[in-house]
Length: 226
Picture 1: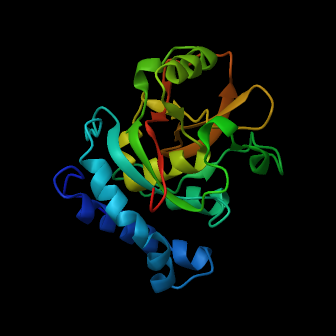
Picture 2: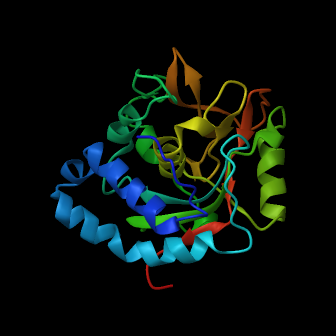
């Protein structure tokens, strides 16, 4: 669904758009809720979204891959295996997919790192989001260290899916991104890029740079009432 309003000019309307975006993609049913129950789950975050969009570090520039906030639904509520097929490229029709490089049962082991503090959250806002194309061609380990040095956090798999679900424009050729906030204890780093004219969730090695793969990050996460 197109978003005619900038989140910075009308954050409340942008939050409502993101909620409706998930409803139209069957998130309530996938979570075992009806639309009203789902909206009640996320409604307390609306005021937080308005406040975040007014913050000094809020930025909205889709061409540069920056958005002020995202509504994120954790995999414990709706599994990644269900959310990825509900993504498409901007203007595309082919559904996103999880790459076969994830051997059976391995995707579940890619969990949020302690540093993200995202573990245990069900519905929340990610804010100050950047696609991180400045790190294209940089070794992922180096990129992750640079981001940590700036006091920013790495995106998890769910957050990467949320980014391309709400803003498919940010996933473009040669400007794709890794998701260092989800790890499984080995050298693999999840990433989302374009394959077969659709978004693909795969992984790359932490020591191998790719010219078309940056490192996504965010200023932080917010739950209702913080």
